[in-house]
Amino acid sequence: MTLNTKGNIDKINTMFDLQYDLNNETNGNEWITGVTKDGRDIDWDLCISQETAELIDSIKSWKHWKDLNAPTDYENLKMEVVDIWHFLTGEIITRNGGERVVITKISTPILDRYARDYINLNIPLNINNTDIKKLANLLRTDIISKARHLSYIVTHTKLSITVETHTDSLLLQFMMLLYASGMTIDDLYSMYIVKNTLNRFRQNNGYKDGTYVKVIDGKEDNEHMMMFMNNSKKQLTADDLYVLYEDFYKAKA
Image (cartoon, rainbow, N blue to C red):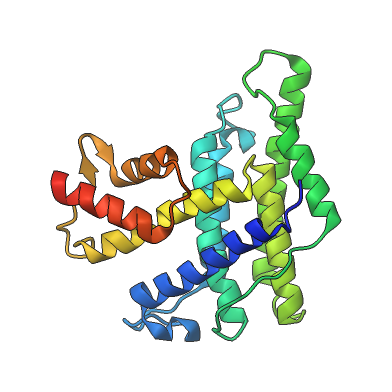
């Protein structure tokens, strides 16, 4: 498999565009200067570092003093990957002068091999086999390593390298974290579209003033929206999903 297909690059650029628009809607156009419309400072570095810490905490067995055999919460781990991407796009846009970013390629052949190897492994992590367990532990360790390295690039390298090199490094390291977490670009895209659409919908329907209805029929809004995305026979855009959920919300809330 190859990351740099037109379809994958198109999905990445769509996500950058959606994040740009969402930031404008929620934070005001001045967000590209590092502040919100309410005058609050935006610290992308801290946001990403915090999300990587939450991702690592999904791997509960990283602690040497407790929870030694606790299972990894992979569903939450994947959501944390999407949350990191949410803030990483903002960091990259800001670093590139606040303009809309157009990605043409993410290097390198090394990444393509890395992605192929991880996705083809498809290891059943709950099998009671010593060798499998050892490999599963290595995979979890690698996820932690990739997350920590991404956090390091964000917080320690931006002043010492060019904007272009910094952008390339962030994208490459994030993609390695994505694949180490067992996800593909398609997975990222689907989960990101849900998160982006949900953020827009909440903002437009009383989330800030407390009138928004988050739980309908015993399920949270993100569960309903993910169901719409997964059950669709076609690839939904953010606008498609917004309309579907808006109709559902009006009928149920």
